[in-house]
Image (cartoon, rainbow, N blue to C red; front, side, top):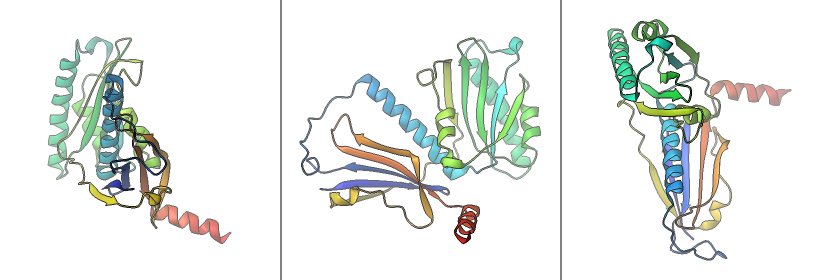
Length: 251
């Protein structure tokens, strides 16, 4: 039986989706009737897609040791609503973009504005790091502290993608959130192929120079079509990892 394989290739690895594409189910499986999705299923799928797209952009446009920063608000400067918080961020990003341009660099960012159930506002932002980024952020954000962390690439930024896209539905500590990103990060074009033999579905094939991110593997049935589906990420083995593996084999 046929299945479709969709691959999105990034600088750090490949994000793969596979799903049964024939009219009937796999051999020995009874075809299930197509169902209308419930609002909960639609919401869950939309959130998963948002996380997936965020991760693809992190894998394509960002690197280990770029910045994951938090912009905080002093209590007396907390915004009255999300519209005001978005305005504060927009004003800050103008300054940041101008400073990057002065240095001949392009700015890329992904951010989530959040307000907790106790009324504390903050902005999480992923930003490509250049010389003086910490000073630029401090200059641009005048409403509170700026806390910078160097990003860690293990797992292809999967946990970071989930964290930067969280909502009150995924984190009950949040009262409201707003996700956005810079426009200069288009998603890589997907490669789509149809395979006629279902038997090749059984095992995930890992090409040379890659390893399977086991935490990324999702397998099951599409609740709407009843067909099998699977998604996973293949990450490129970095040179330092190859050297470490060779040393282990020599011992």
